Image (cartoon, rainbow, N blue to C red; front, side):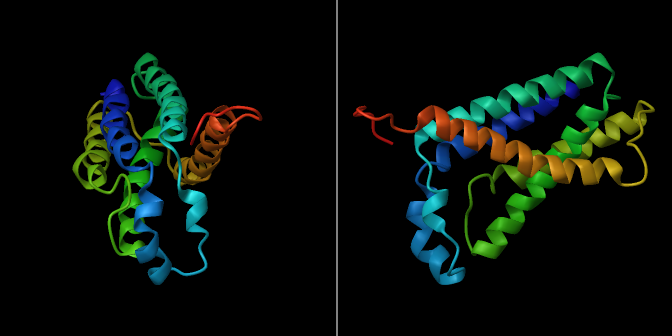
Length: 170
């Protein structure tokens, strides 16, 4: 079950890799009508950027799944990752609702992300592994996700931006 996090993440991020590059540019007229003032042009990423960001995130998810496997799902880091993954799926659905249309990741969120998270949580509970009480885990996961996403996107930007004198295109 713990390695299932990596498998579910891979399915979800395959959708994001297929749809993220150019999505903001293609959806921009609808997005600007719906939410004027948001700098949509900043959300338009190249295929190289998306690939690098997803690869970096994959490394983090693999490490978290491994921590879960080593501890029978008891690792606080794995537990936080599982909570964050489920919340991430809910966020995709909220994004689609707010923007009034498809957003990258919105298809696999209700089909893979949320069902996997619910299933994994139930499997852990059945095995006697309870989620920590008090909401600290969920709060930590909520705080960690934007930081991790910002980090992988910043690294992807640094690794894929055109270098002076380079003819490489976005």
